[in-house]
Amino acid sequence: MLGAALASSLIATLMIGYGIFLAELVKEPGAGATVLVLVPPLLAYLVIRPGDHLLAQEFLSGTRWFLLVSGLLPILGAVLLVISSKCPSGALTLTWWILAGVAVLIALVLLGGAVLPLRKAKRFPLSKGK
Image (cartoon, rainbow, N blue to C red; front, side, top):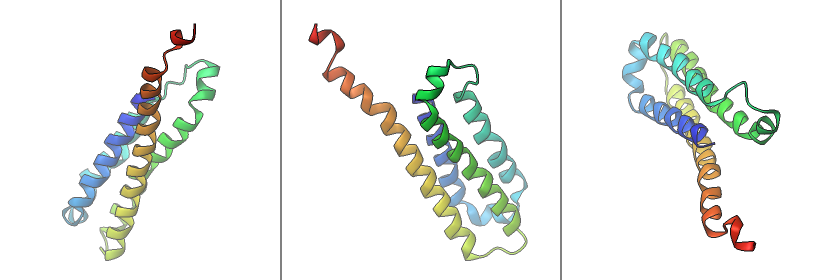
């Protein structure tokens, strides 16, 4: 769970960083689009291990969906970057910041899901009730 939160945070940071330098990236989209297409799926694959136990897969299915959507956002951004290199417009900037905002929301949800159970476990240890 913590790995998924970190991966989605890195993806959100990547999207925000690209949003800041979007004007320069539109002029030469090749390398920027390549990073957007290759890095997020690699992060997601490292976090989601296909050999997990069936019970673990069921518990982590929501996390996997959030991480999947988080990994798809930069790929959509890469497609937009390549398409808009022909005719850049203000709609690209708006769309990019919407994608970055969704990436940040997903990262916050996954971070909350990873951190909040840790706080609860410290307040209510299992051995206290015995």
